[in-house]
Amino acid sequence: MTLPNDLDSSRLPQHVAIIMDGNGRWARQQGKIRTFGHQNGVLAVRDTVEAAAELGVKFLSLYAFSTENWKRPRWEVNALMELLIDTISKETKTLMDNNIRLQAIGDINSLPEKCRKQLDETIQKTNSNTRMTLILALSYSSRWEITNAVQEIVSEAIKGNIKPEDINDNVISDHMCTRFCPDPELLIRTSGEYRISNFMLWQIAYTELFFTNKLWPDFRRNDFFDAIRDFQKRERRYGMLSENQPDDNDA
Ligand code: IPE
Ligand code: IPE
Ligand code: MG
Image (tube, rainbow, N blue to C red; front, side, top):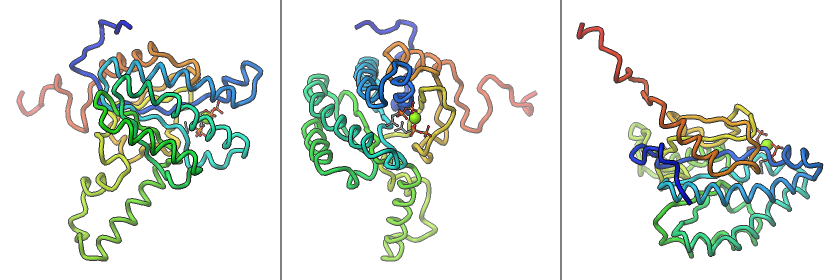
């Protein structure tokens, strides 16, 4: 597949995160039930993973199931878990062929056993792959993750392994599920919703946000490239001054 030649390969985000939203609305537009949207969402995942790997993105995080999604009707949750098992099992070969490593973040212990087993198996199998890491956020929410991190840090403090005054940004990051990867530089959300829905709140402090009206099952490689193109036009200032803006004191 060809890559767009207007993208600057020296200014690629290392880590892109995606809130894949809009499956239910997409299905309704076709007069089908919500699970039909989830099934078609898998095609968007495949295309996006391929595009990200070809482009040279090192980490791609996909928000696939939130802590709050457990509150959906039982039939939908069951269908999502089945789809997850089936997709991971079927895609393991493609991950191997493309040298992609799988990782999962979230409260993995809360997933059904069959799901955990399939995840574990594919994570182990793809562990030495080096081209890109695909991170699935499953039973994940930021508030769960931050609460978990606080509990761990407080336990260590009580044991005397860390002093409260030594707790800093880095210590906290090291207790997040994402401790093995850099913070995302770009976060994409589909479906025209302008919210974060409890995703990576700690990690996105200075992330560039990209919102699109496309519903997730319609999202394809060119939509991913559009987001990267938009990212490359932005100036990231991290609270400092623009590089082009003269310092008044120099005048
Ligand atoms: C995203 O699509 C998939 C999950 C949250 C699991 P939705 O199922 O939220 O679809 P909409 O937002 O209702 O259209
Ligand atoms: C966010 O989508 C969670 C995932 C994409 C897994 P939701 O559909 O659950 O979020 P809200 O309800 O629009 O905030
Ligand atoms: Mg939704």
